Image (cartoon, rainbow, N blue to C red; front, side):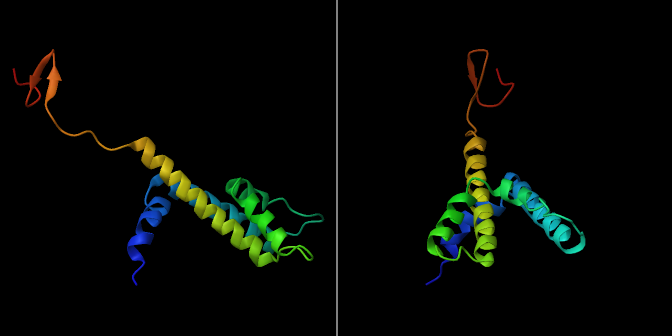
Amino acid sequence: MDTTPRLRGPARLMFGNPVSLVYLALVVAAALFALVDMAFVRHADASFAGIWVVLLTAPTVFPLWLAGDALWADSGSPQWYSIAALVVAALVNALLLGLVHRSLRGRPAARGAVVSGRRHTRRHGDR
């Protein structure tokens, strides 16, 4: 069974509009900043560079993290789950931003008769 048509709509909402693309670019930039800070910068204390990724994916990431803590109640959720939750939260937020963008943009108005000076005209400027 081909699932491509079912995935095309959400993928278009996540990656097919400028609002979602700018949001995802910000998330990727914040993640790269955190990775570079973690790998190449020495700190005496913990760095807060990763907080930007969390803030950009909020509030969607918090229920995912709570679900991970519920699944791994004894030891806490593993690191791979925390990273996957950030990725899923960013994609869900991009999908929601795509829905908002589509609803605010609306559909273009149908091209019909132009009303000018209380006279209906076929083309603009006809009298």
